[in-house]
Amino acid sequence: MNNFVSSLLLLLSIIAVSCSDDAPADFTDDATGEEEETPDDFSGPAYADNYTDIASWEQRSQWNLVNVHDPTIEKDGDYFYMYQTNASYGNAHEGHGHYPVRRSSDLVNWEYRGAVFSKAPGWIKDSLNNMRARMNPPLEPIENPDYGFWAPHISKVGDTYRLYYSVVVNNPITGNDSNTSWTERAFIGLAETNDLSSGEWKDKGMVIHSVADGMESYERNGNNDWSGYFKFNAIDPSFIVTPEGEHWLVYGSWHSGIAAVKLDPATGKPFELEELEDYGQRIAGRGDVNNNRWQGLEAPEIIYNEDTGYYYLFLAYDELSVAYNTRVARSENITGPYVGIDGANVTGGAESLPVLTHPYKFNNHSGWVGISHPSVFQHPDTEDWFYASQGRLPKDIPGINASNAIMMGHVREMEWTEDGWPVVSPQRFADVPEENITVEEISGTWEEITLNYEYQSMQESIIVVLNEDNSLGGDISGTWSFDDKMNILSINDIELIVSNAWDWEAFPRKSTLVYSGINGVGVSVWGKKID
Image 1: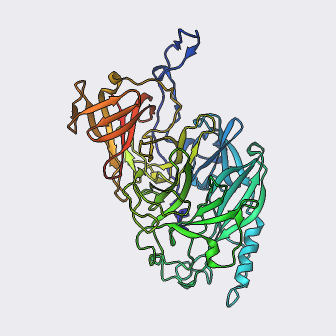
Image 2: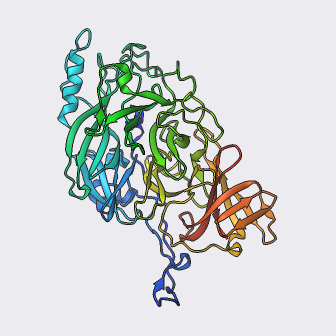
Image 3: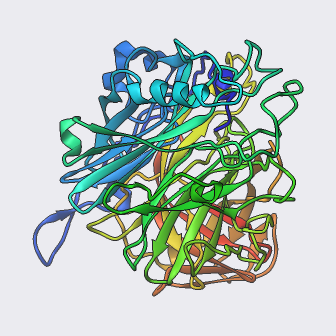
């Protein structure tokens, strides 16, 4: 996130209520005599997307996925643990610690569990003022720094859990006006624990910080001057251990792109920070990466898929409140070059494709915007892949005050195409029972959304009818077919992965089928069966 995100966290009110179907009698498995739940008798999440009546701190026991922003998820024992930035509706987290945490046994129902730190770690102020004292000329210390606590990342390393966390300092470097001086540097710190359930962390101090590269001064020419004094912005950490056992931190936001720096496995920190090169090398950028220091991408999330042999770099594009959209590029090497599905060099500044998430709207709902800064993780027991992020309601919903400040946690299933690219479910995860999908179930009426990139615009659905004679109707024409062994639906030339899901926009909510795939120009296509 950029240093002005706090201005986006506004109070709001909204009314939107949903409920779920009453569940009919359970199905009995004739072979075992045991009852099995099927999508038709599944009773899924009933909590409302409107959470304004339970958004306050006093009602945190009812939050579930309320007030989630920039989530990061790891499993320990029977539970998944989600950590996040401090952002919340109405600043409900303010005064109650930093890096809120909640846990879930099923990725659907979440329990609020407090925060990692009760106060700002002392090393941040000490490091900041030591650096100020060494500047030429030396600068006076900042006695009461104004901090922002952003975007942590949780990973398990052996028997230890490492939490990399971001802290920005909002005070101007010189003077008192952020229009005439850049704000102070950002820091990434590290905390460790052997037991996520304990809530007890040992802070390991600074990992890396934003560093001046001499290309720009500390002066700022008004609030439209984005050419910062530092090379890589030390926020938004992501961590990975390569198959060869190397440890890497991937980080960065807007300024000069995304960096990767090799870490000492024993400490989780860079081997040294003496030269500018020690702060890492750029592995992704946007536009003219050699001259543009405000590149419109952030929040890297990196994974390695052993089935494909590629590293996948997920990126958040554009501003976070509305336009946020998720891209992905891949490489056989941790440091790149990363390329998109069109073969373009994202490390060199090319636009990354495919588009995985984008502001969208199905019928019967206001839609969601600001869907990015993901946590991408694999269930350690089932090996299923998931994508988690926040979603925001759109701006200016009639009758709703500052509706864009609603931030709901979204957890979605993630599938892989035959040629090794990820696609994200069009519906949030509800743990709907999996069931064999037949050709007969596929035919009917669907809503389809093509996630074409449009800055701050929502993509809305069209109607697609899959006729029993394999012709297409509604708003498109052509033919369709379905492979019930692979659950692949082909609509004209697009292959789409079909799965059971929960229809969050229906009233009452119900089980349905969804599909997701990538079209010929590298854009995700989402579908949801409605009849």
